[in-house]
Length: 164
Image (cartoon, rainbow, N blue to C red):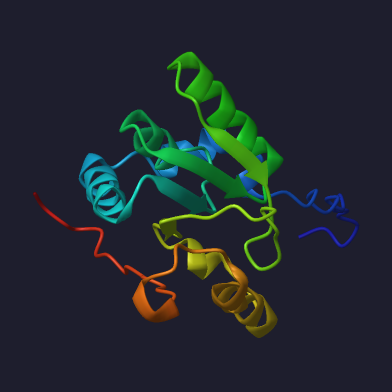
């Protein structure tokens, strides 16, 4: 081996995220008709107003809106929201999409019958502070009040292998 060998220094990769490439994200996380049906049925049981947090490219928001539910989809990634918006427009689906951080947001008094944080979205919170912020919204989010003033937070942790 030659002692005079030289190596090119590779420049560090630009910081990027899969969420900046919704086309690639959708390839690794394609729509799941079984889970879509589950969330549509669950939302219909609870009422028409749905908040889909961490909605990404709309893989749940769009089927929910298509099922005649009033949906607000929220996500931190503007690229994912653009993809969801284009997909909804292509299908002539009315969908309200907002850019937000799931741990710190204000929907100006919007009330919802169902708040969905689906498909492992909570796992995208990376620090203890992220978790604290996210779970504190249960105290402040405007969820339909149930009898005796009780607010209900319903969390579903689903096995990806659900079958009809």
